[in-house]
Length: 393
Ligand code: SDX
Image (cartoon, rainbow, N blue to C red; front, side):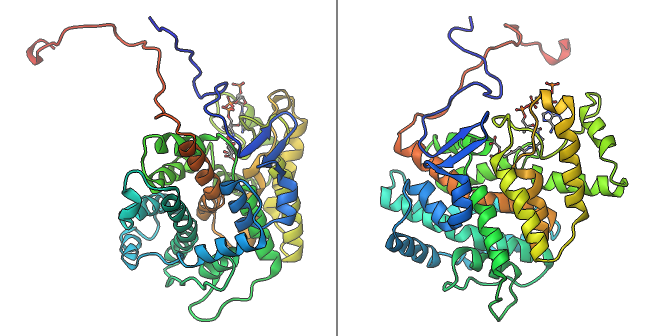
């Protein structure tokens, strides 16, 4: 009676769509955005240029990039009434809960985005607005956590510098950021920008397939990313490393815990559904860690523990047999810490980086006129029975 259903729980072997955005080769550890390798983009491009590439499919000309950045710069302000949202959150509320709520609410502040049958130009305006406002919202969440006044966007700054200004700037002067910091931020956001049909991108696509507006779709993606098995791992990694540091840096003990099936503890930042080799992003971030810590003159005990964990795990048969390697989340938190971010902001930064990828996936799903996502099941419940009145139960 299950008819034609093939069961594939967790979609481990299911292709959900045809996509031209991102290519992954899990065996070889290859990642490309629109055919360009992540190594080249991380070294030579900027986050806003990679956002353009992912969304529109081509590297922009100088004029196209200038226009894109100008369009974004005139939409960076968030409606002043949005501040009432921030006033409503308790000061210690998790930044991801704030981000998913506020992004979903952007639709309410933007009735035009709720119209059915938006034209490609109208959709593009919403895309630009979302990219513009996301960095403002992320920086306001951070300022709120400190009890500091928010900083308004300086539209003459480039996207990443503007984000850093709103996040770490003070009320008046525009901070003159160390190019090392701006460079590291661009690189991190580029490395997080897309990753084909991961959990949160699939969430964005399936929510968008019901013709829900882009804000609702991205808000759903933010919620999916929050999970510690997904984007939330970058926060969980640092919390794990801090625990190991407090425990005297005994990496062998924690590796043993990760292998113990009776112990729910997993080595956070290790393993991946697709990469059965090194996550190419982890390699780049690990190197960037050394560079930025050296340049900022920070010696980081937690980085030493991370490197020791990696060294021990990569020699351990349990990890080798299961092809468990460091993933994108293993080192990223160390750089975020060096840049001055608290751990509960890490997954929000992942979301800021992933936004153009989610948008590109959502746009492609709509342009391909994909049907509403509605999987089937194999029913294993009770076949049938009659209602029992309360006095007979
Ligand atoms: C991201 O999909 C993407 O592309 C995601 C992402 C992106 O850019 O969007 O790359 C970002 O989410 C990276 C992953 C971050 N998550 C973590 O670091 C959390 C720790 N890692 C895992 O929980 C796990 O590795 C997953 C969730 C990443 C992948 O899980 P799978 O593919 O479902 O694999 P599994 O859980 O079935 O594990 C296979 C085996 C199991 O052992 P056995 O049952 O075969 O004995 O490997 C073991 C697992 O117990 N295992 C681990 C482990 N990860 C897997 N054991 C210890 N520590 C780990 N981290």
